[in-house]
Amino acid sequence: MPNETDRKMMEILRILSDSEDVLGAKTIANGLKNKGYTIGERAVRYHMRILDEKGFTERIGYSGRRITERGLRELEKGLIYDQVDFVFSKFEGMMYKTTLNPVEGAGKVVVNTSSFIYNKKVMDILKKVFKSGIAVSPYVKIIDNHSETSGKREVKLETVCGTTVDGMLLNDGIPVIPQYGGLVSIEDNIPTRFTELIAYKKTSMTPLEAFTAKDMTSVLQVVEEGTGVIPANFRIIPSSAREKAEELFQKLGKIGISGLLKIGENGESVLGVPVEDDMIGIAIIGGIAPLNAANEAGCEVNIKLAENIVDFKEMKSITNVKPVIKTAGPESSAKVKFILSKAWNLIYNVDLDVESLEGNVITNISYIDNNDLDESLEIMNRVLKLRPEYATTKYYKISPHPQDPKISGIATVCSLTIDGILIKNGIQSVPRYGGILEMEEKGPRFVELTAYSGSSLDAHEIYISKGMTSVLDSIKNYGRILSSIKQIPYLARPHALELLDKIEKCGFSILKVGDPSELVFNAKVERYHAGIVVPGGLNPIAALKESNIPVEVKSVAAMMNLKEMEEF
Image 1 (cartoon, rainbow, N blue to C red):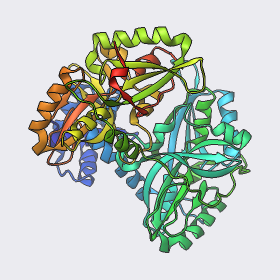
Image 2: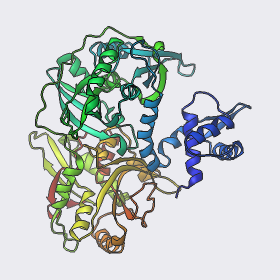
Image 3: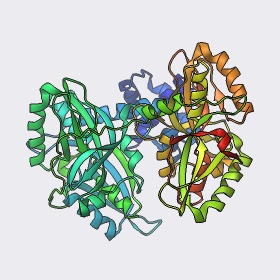
Image 4: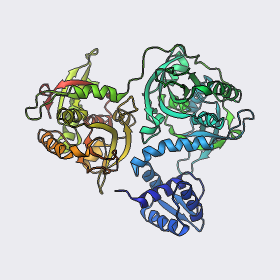
């Protein structure tokens, strides 16, 4: 279990990763003090020696240390339960550092940092999107580097992040609460509603980072046809501050910062997102939208969100702006549907008898071309034969696509079925996180987590679309599989163990049942609860994606009688 020393070392890595300079023990000690850890320079040196030995940091002469690539990877996945909390606090910190003067156009702004190999196609796409106004600002900072190793021109592009607007609201004395990152549907150049949302406080990755896969947005289509899906984020402020906020947006617009999609009225839903009374919602275009467009066109762009603070005077406008998006109209009745609400309704309908295997289970249904069906079944069979514990069960069913006879659906049992079985037996089981479990020599550990509450998408769909799994590598040695964690009251743990034992005997996989309040594979459950870790029902499907078989993934899709399914 991670201890106080582990946390201090992770904070040291964060301090080093946030600086481009080599840092000495005194600077690091001051940074730790600001984070609530009061330790002296000698203690810092002790921790640094341990980090050096692990290869996470390296000593640079007498100047101090810097983080290594290995250290950056460890920072991304270490203490994942802490990372879930850190993502939101990172945004709060960036808001605090924003110092832009909205009249003079001088001061610090939050930027997204992206990198790519120079390509005229990429630059043309970026300029096209910036010109259309589908960005927070056309102002960018471009840093060219000629790589001696590759001989290619590497470009680092810094674009204004929507968090800058949050910082500006805060600097104007307006309380602002960033709530979601997501996707907004545009129809005939008019924003209609959010189609997907992920809460800032519920994930180990920046919410908009979840939507950077090229098949999740259609920014270019919006630019060219006026219809599609773009990234956006959502925050709320007190309704009494609405007039002042509007004045600020007018000032920001004059210096080239906008991206405003809609600002609501008191208690009014904004683009399908409910807002409490006495608050108003504000939706702003995601600052990464131009980079999303480059990804959509097949260009390789590495995107990092809210990564840095830059002086606005160092940024230059990349193009003149002629906005294509019009003012949002009246609210429709359509609301964003969160995955947990859908899941609860399906969980209620689980009635599987673990003795007879009669009854309904929840299934995922993924669609593939019929020409790929035989190969897909061979891959799935290999995964389940060598690692049956990597799937909820070995049951599956082939079914026709509802519209296209050239496509088949592959149904696999969803792990939420286990919640349904527990609940039907009087044990309150709550799906807490979908995640990625890294299988390594010292034992499994979660390296990504996204809460079921506060998300409209099953996290496993996101991870598959972004190519974050390595199920096939896990079969051979070490890799990453989809997994989830659910929690039960600690008093129900003995009963749950008996029931889960029966479940396993009839072919369901349970990876671990934690002790009360225990960190389970580096994931945290609420106090006075025990965690249950189960594999994702989509792991065999993830293996298809890893094998370059085109697959459309639909998680938590439908109910199905287990007796109608076959077993590998």
